[in-house]
Amino acid sequence: MTVSPQTTIRPRERDALLQSLRAGVVPRMGQQHVQVGRVKEVKALLSDINRITDGGSGSRFIIGDYGSGKTFFLHVVRSIALQQKLVTVHADLSPDRRLHATGGQARSLYAELMRNMATRAKPDGGAMSSVVERFVSQALTESRDTGAPVESIIRRSLSELSELTGGYDFAEVIAKYWQGHDTGNEQLKSDAVRWLRGEFATRTDARAALGVRTIIDDSNFYDQLKLLAHFVRLSGFGGILVCLDEMVNLYKLANTQARNSNYEQILRILNDSTQGSAASLGFLFGGTPDFLLDPRRGLYSYSALQSRLEENSYAVDGLVDYSGPVLRLASLTPEDFYVLLTKLRHVQAAGDESAYLISDEGITQYMNHCAQRIGDAYFRTPRNTIKGFLDLLAVLEQNPDRAWEDLVTGINIQRESNPDLAPLAPTTDPTSVPTRTRDILSDQNPADDRHTTNDTDDELSVFKL
Ligand SMILES: Nc1ncnc2c1ncn2[C@@H]1O[C@H](COP(=O)(O)OP(=O)(O)O)[C@@H](O)[C@H]1O
Ligand SMILES: [Mg+2]
Image (cartoon, rainbow, N blue to C red; front, side, top):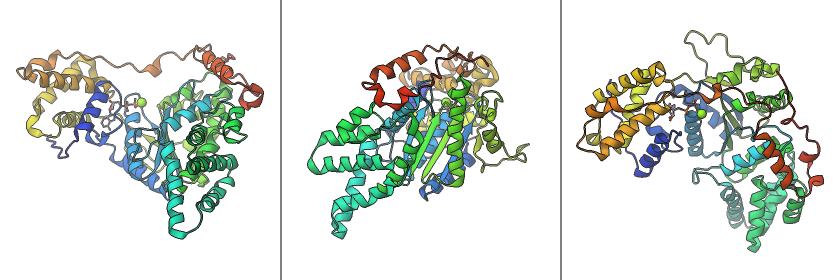
C-alpha cells in the first residue's frame, strides 16, 4: 500500500500534534493530519452541525470500546463545528461532574464546560468573554448602521431571552455586562462573565455583585445551556455543540437514584432534540458499550432510553445506519493503523517526503514488532503503539548515524489496560466526601442556596446492586 499525503503542516501544528500523541493524549488541533477512516461518521456529524446552524438540534451517542477513538472523534467533530461557526463546550464526566446532582456536581460540570468554551478565534477555550463582547459589538454596529440607540437594541435582543426558562436573570446579567462596558466598569464586566460561567457559589454574592437573585446551580444546568445556545446566536454564532466524554462515569454511579436522575436528564435532552425544542443546541456523548448496553446500570437500564436508543435491527451483517442517535465506532483495523503510521511519519517530517526517517518497509516491521510484543490489540488500542512509533522517530531524528533497522525491534511497547475494567469504585468513594465538604464550606450563606437544603445525600448512602 502506498500513501503519500500531500498536505503541508505548519510547525506549530506539527509540534502540538507530536507532543500530545507522545504524551498519550488526543491532540486538540491538527487532527486532520493524522486522522484515518471515519469518513461516513464525520459526514453524519457534519449534517448534524448544519442542522444546529439552521436552528435545529441533535444528540448523538458515540459508542466504542476503549481505545477505539471516541475522544479523537469528538475532537475532530469539535474542530469542524468551530470551523462552521458554532461555539463548542466540552468536558469529561467524573464523579464530581454530572448532568444531574444535588451536591454541586452538575454546576461543576457546567463550570468545566464554560472554562472550555471555544470559538474559531479561540479554539483553546476561555471564550466566554469574547462571545459576550461580540454581542455588544454587534449591537454597536447595528446602532451605527440604523441610528437606533444601543441600549434599545440590546434590550430588544435580551427580551427574547427573558421569555425562556430562567431567561430573566440571564438577560439581566448580559445587561450588566453592557452597563460595565458602557461605563468602563471592568469589575462589573468580569462579574457578569463569572456568573455566566457558573462560578458564583452563592446567591448572596450574585445579588451583591449583579443584583440578580439566582445563580447557575445543579437545578438549572440544562436550562442554562438552552439559554446560552440562544444567546450565542444573538452574538452571531450558529449555535452550541456540547461534547461530553467519559460518560461511563454515570454507569459507574453506585446509587441507583443518582444514576437514574442522570439518565432522566439525558432523556430530556434526547426528547428535546428529537422534538426540535432545543434550538441551535447539539450534544455528543462519548461512552463505552457498557455505558449504553448494560441492562442493570447502562442507559438500557432506563427503559424509556432503551426504546429510543435501540439500534436499527436491519443494520446488521455489515449494513450500517448513520441516521440514528447511536453511532458505533469500530476499532481501527491493521490497514487503518498502517495509514496512521505513514501519516505520523509525514507529520514528523513536517510534510517533506525527502525527510522521512523510516521507509514503508520499516513501518511494516514496526507493526510486526508490535504484534509480537502485545498481540492483536496493538491496532485496536493504539495509544501506546503510536507513542512508541513517535519515540522511534525522535531517536532516529536525533541520532542521524543510526538507521531504523537497528532500532525497530528494540522499542519497548506496553500493552494498554482499560481503566474501565478495574473494579467499580466502592460506594465509600473517597472523592465524594471532599467534594461535598468543599461545597458546604464554600457556601457562605447556606440558607440562601437551594442545593444545600434539599440534598438527598446521593453519594454518601450505600446502595448494593
Ligand atoms: N480516526 C483516527 N485517526 C487517527 N488516530 C486515531 C483515530 N482514532 C483514534 N486515534 C488515536 O488512537 C488513540 C486512542 O484513541 P482515543 O480517542 O483516546 O480512544 P477512546 O477515547 O475511544 O478510548 C489516540 O492516540 C488517538 O490519537
Ligand atoms: Mg477517550
